[in-house]
Image 1: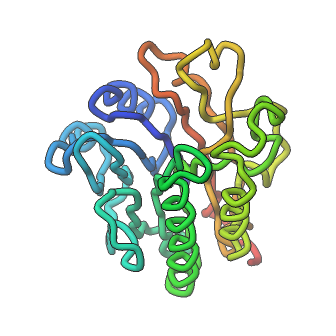
Image 2: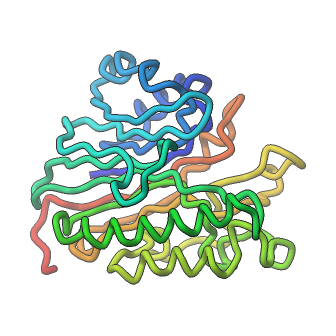
Length: 265
């Protein structure tokens, strides 16, 4: 099973790119963030036409998340019950697999804007709620993958110029601690589970030719629960969509689970 995450930064603008990528990448599940469209405007028919199902939580102008999948989902939940919020930042759904049901969560974590801002405080509170919610969900769904735009670069290796970014939003110690707290629940950052090339990022600013200079950050992640880690075969960043005309500033991250064979857990 191939699962991917992609912050598309407006599904209306990027829909042709997403449909093309689904046709060539062979992914079974695609978690989307920043749909930036009202719930009722979601283009379900276009995904069904190429053999995918979808569940989503939309919002005009901002936020919005979705799970696109070959198999039908069930037990769909939008947002966290322990964090009442009008922002559509999380959707979870259950999918079948040869190893039993897998819980897939698509998350769009708050950006935080700037350290010490109200939005930064909101971000840390949101992460705290996410930690508590995932801790509870793992007791119900031990086989879980949480994919999305976390808006956190976990380590200096995930930053093109650590000295320039030091202490700034996306890399500040409290944000990194919040991300590490999620790992402490038993999740593994799938990308770092495997040897990787240096300077591998998932986001590049539109400004100052950042992509051409590879001046990016790795802020999009796939967290795999301990029950699924033995089945985790690979994790990679696909930079090709960032080269598209009118691209998203993010690019897909893909994790492959080899679920067809029995492995000791």
